Image (tube, rainbow over all chains, first blue to last red; front, side, top):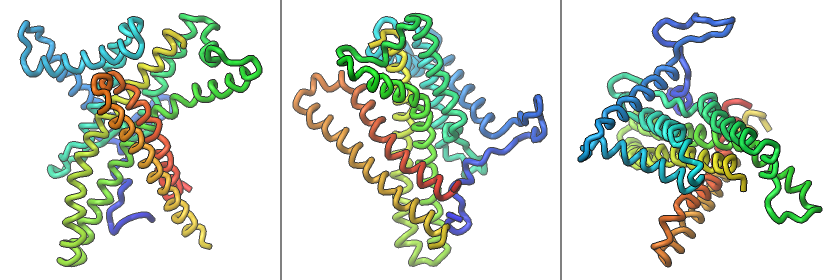
Length: 261
Length: 75
């Protein structure tokens, strides 16, 4: 069902145990080391290597140090502009979050399929983006309630709300607050999934039309391939934008917790 | 109608939502550019808001995509 020829666009998201760890279990739950976990480790190592190589603290920074300083300065600015001075202490968290998602998205786009390896975009799974979103959301809840105690609920009643409207506004604001982790996780997961499915469907067009004959190959395969190249460039843009949007929304939610309205 | 056919038609109809989101995202960036070119010095300060609007508009298109994927692969 929903396949183009023999090409199944959803197969790339299949999670498979690797290195013979299929039957590892902890308390009755399977904890096999999957391709998803492998790519998480690879992203973390890539991120660690990227930052470590820029930490030489030269007075005149080299290219690598400039790159790292660009990203740290970028997140620093983001937190300062959206959460003010109180946002400074969240820079390490938001920086890790942003870079981890960015690495994951970009590494998942690597064209290493030509070497027989299969890049796996783990941000295309709601389990992972959902956990990242819950992480951000729980920071907001914990900071909000520790810092403002029950006064935190004033977040749901904007200033100047007429008294008869307060019950309605409260419910609406509460619902919009509670769906934040879902919308945060869902956005990243769906954007990555959609892009990868699109690329695979177009790849299916190229292969199937070429198999169907030279005429089909020229009039369907070649335009599809050109479109794939363009979409790949778009996907790289989307990978960066989605990581930025995740960090941006996290910083806004942290602002809510730190400064209320 | 066959249930399988109805599912696929529903998935196709859900794709309309993706096109609607295209209008929304285009509107966000179009309006931003329109006003950014009038006052370029104020444009950089509004980039955060631009992406918030983009994220909100895009989410609804992505939801349409989720609906069609659920209809094809899950339902």
